[in-house]
Image (tube, rainbow, N blue to C red; front, side, top):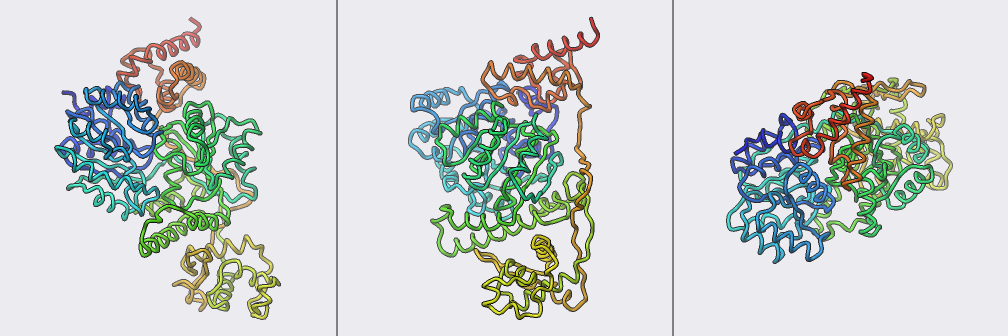
Length: 610
């Protein structure tokens, strides 16, 4: 019987576990339920795949998306593990054939959609199979307070109870607030589970919020800097996806699109084009991506601000899954806040909730939206802001976000702050930001005149400021507790807990402003591998492309960018040395070792002239 480390090295090519993995694996091998809250790229799948290969029977993995299942099974097969998936993408004959193989013990790991669990065909199989573990992937889908609630996940405990013998149950997710974590524990009926919450920090990701006047031009500028990389652009609406994708194609980029308005066939084709690197840029709504295991995504651009930090960090986290430096840009516009409120109001999700639960969910959505908006306005460390939101302590300077590496100047806005608070008070805390700004700037609009606000002593007091500059000051006051903002479709400004001290002259307020003529920030990226030779790396990438096309599998499933960089750095020439490269296991040595070792040897011979 092999050990867990032998399985890790033989099948997955890694010499040691990452933080948090081993404890979860040990708990599952001791037949104890377990929960892993681990960020995207932390290696959640290994936490159930390694024990699955050591357990006697079958492991069922409940997964929400067809694309995720296909991706995981393809990766397992490449690593020498027999796996299968059961979902609606299979024909009836294919489904029955897969079940026959499963009954015959061909597969160790089977991925299944939650809607299939209680169907007669699957029940017939499950009642007669030796099921050692049920793993719930994307476990936050079980909670109505999670960002991707899926009611069919609520049937998982019932399915477990129908089995002749209760298997060990494990659950994994990348983003879960404390409330969602509690739902995972209770709604999945876990028994005395081992719980591991690893750091949400992804130090290889560079974070930046930009506020461009023209988002499309900003996007084109970013793409010009990343021509050799694969990336995702997230848009809030289908129309934005169509417009941005068309513009990128007109500018010569190999871009494709993904949203719920496309046919299943087109979505599948476009997703495969992206996964197989036939398209380098995916333009998509949030319908794309949950569980997408494409390791070589070098950048993620949010064309619009997402509705909450859970969604943002999960989507941004699809960059740099191979551990290589990657960049995440959010292009913010104040209209994004209203757009998200509009999308909330039109959402058909959770319409079955009772009135009280719906009201609670609306309030929760508003708090999440405010936290997301504050992220776009903060001048403090962006990484610290995200980690603090998920309940994790973090240093106040990460050195790898714009707010830490960019150039700012500290500005005293105490006087302007008092005028803004006075205006809110004069308006009796009944109006939103637009009216406050109109009054301060001396607007003579029909509404200002009709309400008589042009007669207020504060009218026009800050007329020498542009609206955008005043808006920044209001957001600074909101962030620092001098103002508060109500929720709902028409939010109003009110005095915050620190307002009176500022109005009395007992407080000062400062804000950081970006320096207009600042040099490009210096970005720090952690690198564990020595610098690779660019010429050899190019040759290895070309070989990977050739193999990918001949076998019709994504390139990153053959070897990740990180593994290729390690090969180009260490330049192995023997099978034993090749196995020392992170990401190379026995199965991949047998499949690809000769081709890559030959390429490295030929390259070395060329360098020496022999």
